[in-house]
Image (cartoon, rainbow, N blue to C red; front, side):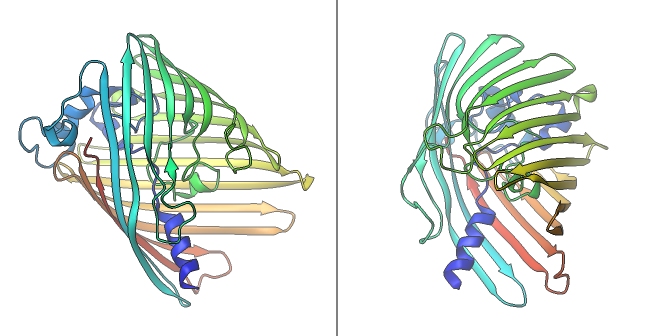
Length: 371
């Protein structure tokens, strides 16, 4: 039983490898490519993104050059860029049946980017982390590797293995809007993506071939997606995404709205609402409808320190019945110096039919991105 609970905890709280601080939108950076090479944000930082990690995001800037790889011991060149992450986490779960926690390394990788003219080759190398009994722990893992072509100053073309673009790039894969719709941990697949930007909006079109290297995994779905985002004056984002996908077991249509909104100098909000209609190969005549949402209200108390309240909700309707869940929560995120993040979060999760036995779940995460 204890091994089972640890496995559940590790699945729930291993975040996405791509770290995206979407709150930076409210500081006048509505486009992800201001700080990241990836058009969807997260992953490797640009040189300008590194400077912002010191000037804008951290409580203390540290010494000169601390934002460079290995805290300034190594410097990126014009053609060689470095990245990487190390994360350790303490999780806990408590309800009427069990009280259990686990502490483990959940990510350690190194990322290398090579630039030739307008083309960049990016690859992340590491091992599968997790609790001692986690499947494939210690095995080689390349979460992403792709070629990125700057086709023009306002457009990018990307091909390779990376996470399909849809909705908000929230770094926590445990969000209902991520794991219910197969955008969770290790959901990267082989995709072709085109993104165009201008001063007011961005539009992206993607095609996914699934996991052509391992078509049996859940992410082997073939899909087409499109996303549109308006910058709303440069300090907010409002957009929508659509996905049409099919695998050997399921055909689905997914659509949603999302936004990152600045209310004042210190207050901001995030939201996402998604609806999926799906038909399964086992019973194509039966339709399953799933709706999930995320609301988040945050406050920047001082430079580098951010606290937030959130609410997640989901419902699922099918011929077999109705299920649902909701989970209010609170959390804090602190970046004391460049390359270091500390995050603490708690949620009270209630599943329909068991309101008298909620799950109290939470985590304390230590994240260092030394490269």
